[in-house]
Amino acid sequence: MFVSVGRSANVENIGLENTDIIVDKGVIQVAANFQTKESHMYAVGDCIGGMQLAHVAMEEGIIAAEDISGNPQPAINYNHVPRCTYTSPEIASVGITEEQAKEQGFEVKTGKFFFRGIGKALVYGESDGFIKVVADKKNQ
Image (tube, rainbow, N blue to C red; front, side, top):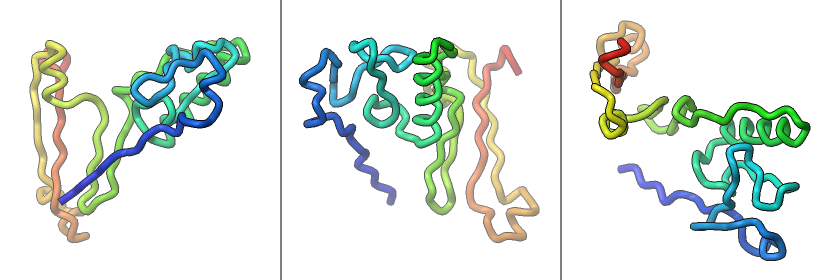
């Protein structure tokens, strides 16, 4: 069994009540460039909710720093961020799920390949698991 209770943003008792920064549902609200309602203050990472991953926070920080220096960057496409859970076997994903693709109106095609069909996986005794690809039939 895998149980995860999540995390919460550290936004209490840090002085935000003395600003115009908006905290909604426990996270700081930001624009696409990570600017808060206080135009000279930015927020990135776990305190803004979303994907609580170090590599995501790093990219958010870069985008905020570039914006501050007058070099605006394109917004992050969070659908392109790889995610991983360190279990045995490991769980990883990138993109959207089959259900999300259907909800977004894609004509979905899926494929699944089990690790037991990979010689190297058998050699290492790591044949549990599979790869699932979710694609749009129109763009195969």
